Image 1 (cartoon, rainbow, N blue to C red):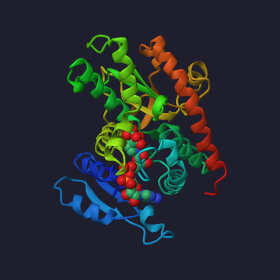
Image 2: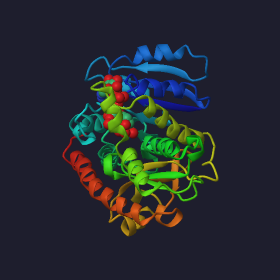
Image 3: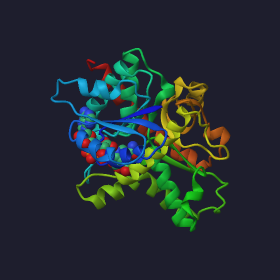
Image 4: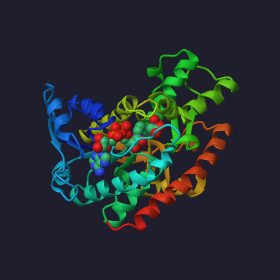
Length: 342
Ligand code: NAD
Ligand code: LMR
């Protein structure tokens, strides 16, 4: 029995993500929350002949808390793609002014109604929205760092696709052969090509293009959509890939053996060995995406890329750049909550 709640379920990501969740045989209840059209999306998906019971929850007005409360009651997993996407010319950081309060308020509701749920945050800027969520949960006294996940899987999906293109390899065979660590925005994104990919090394010129494309892949989609938003379908696929991993462990599954698990942007000091890792390798930066080993819906451990994977000197330099960008976003997110009334 697994109940999953999607907050922002009627949006560009929310709809295809909810469709994929409806197809998951382990999901028994799917609660779709949005401030618009949640009931319509739920009615539509409810006609699909799979076991998950789908219900839509939409508040009558801004003061109505009953819809979100019902959507969250008894939930095991909350996935949040609520908020505005980028338009051409914007960075993800430009979304902070609108999305910060959306995440703060949604996570405060989760902390009050479903403090034991795993929370997967998709809304941008992820580098700051995850610290916002952590701070809200801390303020409410219910923060479990093992259950808070920033969803960075799209960076891994892109890395696998682009490396597959460059090396003429079936990209599905590259799952677990590349880890993407750091954050989720421009040069905070650091792809690590493990040197056991079996596809050989990239030439220097190809390597530079590969890293740039993974770091700025989101811009390609924003530009091509020309004002109609950012990645939605590939994001739904990627978000589902990560959610499926978490859900599989809630129902007793284990992290697949023989490959590096997907990364997630997490609060390291809350994970065994995370504080030491952050101090030794990350100049004390607390939030960072690393491959995570999940069991029973929560992080059991993480893979230390510097000790358990191959990190080249070039990649170490990318990490140094990433850390500079992350520091500001983490502080911005944390301070936003310090100055907020919950
Ligand atoms: P969208 O505008 O199509 O959908 C967002 C949905 O959120 C809308 O249906 C809207 O009604 C809803 N919403 C707004 N405020 C809400 C609230 N308070 N409670 C519940 N629902 C609310 O946007 P999208 O394309 O689906 O993108 C959503 C977010 O995901 C953006 O911030 C985008 O930047 C981000 N994103 C992240 C990644 C990633 O890799 N993590 C990838 C792509 C997009
Ligand atoms: C992405 O990587 O596609 C998302 O973060 C959306 C964006 O704004 O680029």
